[in-house]
Structure formats: structure tokens, C-alpha cells
Image 1 (spheres, rainbow, N blue to C red):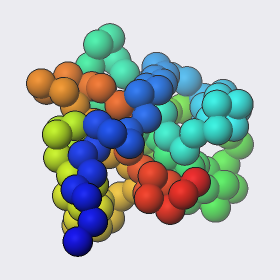
Image 2: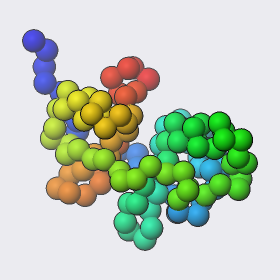
Image 3: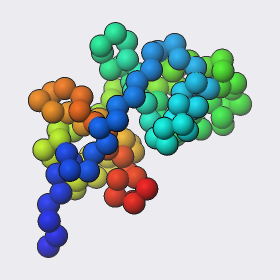
Image 4: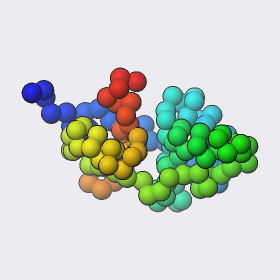
Length: 124
């Protein structure tokens, strides 16, 4: 059997967030610039949701909406699912499958520490 990989060994520590009233156009430009697939939505210090590429495609593009007119809080997914950084990559895969999601917020002692996505083990 292979080595057990802990999430903290492979997670991205780049956590980007936007305000609930950020436009999907601004969010998609930020995601493209940073080559990331999701951003957190924060109200004050509280994480209230996540906007992913999938959210943008399904809730904006497919619906024929104008990205500059749509706000983060109308397309974000909520709640944001999380996993502790000490968990294994296999546990993250299982949770993503059960929740049918592609991104997990990684926490350390209950506080946001990073992100992990399906790209982590797909080599992208």
C-alpha cells in the first residue's frame, strides 16, 4: 500500500475571498488571473459561501445571464464544506463524493487554512 497523504501536505494555502456583492464577472476574472477554480464568499469575517467554476457555468452562463449583473451571493454554494488538515487525501475524496462537490475548505484548529480540490489528485 502507498503512503498515507495528509491534506496539509498537498493543500493550497492560497485562500481568496470576495464580498457577497462582487460580480460574477469580477470573480471569473480573478479566478482566471490566479488560475484557481473557486473563491470564498465572506461577509465580514464569516465565510458564507463559495463560488466555483461549476456555479458560474450552471447558474450564469447556461441561464444566459450577464456576468457583470449577477452577484456572488446569488450563485454561491452554501454551506461551505470543510475538512481538517490532518485528515487524509482519501477522506477528502470520500467527502467530496458524498457531497457531490469538487472543493473543500481545509481547516486547522477550526480556522480556515487552505483549499483542496479534485485537481489535487488529477494532477492539475
